[in-house]
Amino acid sequence: MTIGASLLLIAIGAVLKFAITDNVKNIDLGMIGVILMVIGAVGLILGIAITMSRRRTDIISRPGRTTYIEPNDPTDPRL
Image (cartoon, rainbow, N blue to C red; front, side):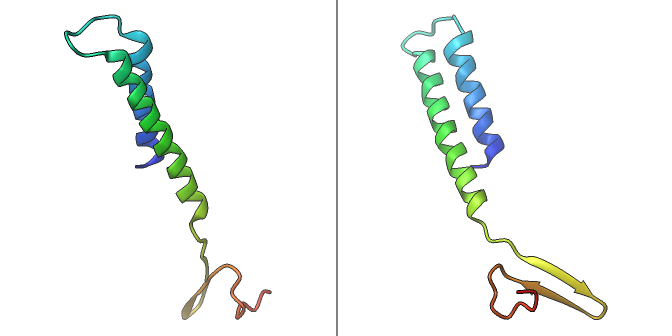
């Protein structure tokens, strides 16, 4: 789940919980809103954690060749 989708779920859940005052027979819209907000919050936390844990690769372009250097690469001439 992406961060944007998580924020969308949180927003829809908040609308269902706090802004909708209609009653639907045998359906608790407030509880559905809380469930959507919780799912959105979990997805947001996971999305941020996955984004922060991705490895970064530097790309150095020189005429005739391209070099990819991984972080903490012992063969990196810049270290």
